[in-house]
Amino acid sequence: MTTDVDGAPPLSLRERRRAVATREILDTAERHITEQGPHALSLRAVARDLGMTVQALYHYFPNRDALITAIIAKAYDALADAVQEAVDTAHLGAGDLPRMVVATEGYRSWAIAHPELFQLLYGTPLRNYAAPVDGLTTRAMVRMSMVFQHEMFGHFTREQLAAADTPPLSPELRAHLELLRQDGPGALPPPAAALLFSAWGHMHGLVVLEVFGHLSFVGEHQAEIFRMAMRNMLTELNARIPAA
Amino acid sequence: MTTDVDGAPPLSLRERRRAVATREILDTAERHITEQGPHALSLRAVARDLGMTVQALYHYFPNRDALITAIIAKAYDALADAVQEAVDTAHLGAGDLPRMVVATEGYRSWAIAHPELFQLLYGTPLRNYAAPVDGLTTRAMVRMSMVFQHEMFGHFTREQLAAADTPPLSPELRAHLELLRQDGPGALPPPAAALLFSAWGHMHGLVVLEVFGHLSFVGEHQAEIFRMAMRNMLTELNARIPAA
DNA sequence: TGTACATCAGTGAACGCGCGTTCACTGATGTAC
DNA sequence: TGTACATCAGTGAACGCGCGTTCACTGATGTAC
Image (cartoon, rainbow over all chains, first blue to last red; front, side):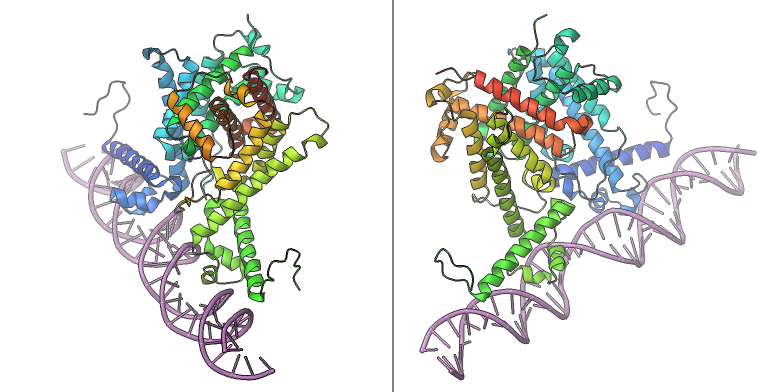
């Protein structure tokens, strides 16, 4: 009776229930984080909220770390989605904002709309939580950085990017960045890669200061300062790349 | 018998013991933070480590929050000191690094040397900890920002700064920044203030990404990228301020 | 088609541990006369 | 100079709460024949 559009084997009752329960646990845990902060997450509280006992959770997640990892992965995806969507709908606004600036504003907006999840991703590492080594979170990160680098560099040729005007990079750093671009999907020449990291830090720094309350003295005008900073950043970035 | 150079009334035995004990509590708590992370701080563990009972701590700090606040204030001061000291000893290095870049590297170095304290200042707010409204921490912040703005803008006239080339600021933001400069000691014209915030975000963002492990794929070369970014930032900043 | 067995979601009970804070009290230190 | 009192650092005992994880077990769901 389940919709079966793609010819996948239909799920059994057990499997459907399991999927629903897993989803409920994740949603509840995420809600707890958004309400109490990432460090307040407790398995017992989640179970209580779902009307079950703690032990039952162990049928769905082997332990607390696994649950947290799942939420982190989900949050990374949500952030990447927000950036992507901001870019995709950029032309709809009639403003003259460069799409790159729109992308950074998508990043900022998601962070401000979900401060606790942003803290989960970029704040103090959780106590007693050991992040897994696998690439569960890396995928979303790569996806997001592809969006940024496409908006920043997409309209330049590889030769232009390789000739970007920066202080000279050491041979070791150049070599390291060359290596990175082999296994990563993004194929940026070293100077452009360095500029990307710098820009990422700039964007992230302003957002993190704002979300964590260290710019509160600027009051209502943080969005305006952010936009100004990102516009300037983009202008200066373009000025570093030689004409074709 | 205590050294009494400044003519202050000599401390009684009780007062000296109290000062020593307070210092010991603070040092131990700070050490616990540097060893276990800010979220692991526990009064009981601190007391245990000092060979006393928990209750005794309440003679020195009214509660856990007060102890944390004292450590935060101390850390802010240490960070400001590190930046100041970097600038003060800048000329000793024979390099051609601008003093502003040296200042930002002082910021970065302190953060890397004391990642857990840096997390305490700029990471996820502590659970169950309510930051006090008073300006205990503000003083050090202002001091540090004065160093940066002196290095960034000290050699320009007020007229030059007021004419800095940025996208136009809204009248509301201009007014707000004018207000800020009245009660703060720093007297930056609005466009310069906006550029200062942007630069602060840039510096902070790169440091926070590095300290929290989000730039680990750059490996050993994070210092080089940071220096490049800060050099570029300074160059671009200067380019925005018209000649006298 | 029904039956025997395997799988799985859930519970009850428990282990062993942590925490911040309050209260009533003792003994040392400091002070006024 | 000694004496009576006040202040303060520290303890013992307790309150009331939280947590993650493991174990043995029941009853529902799924599967092989």
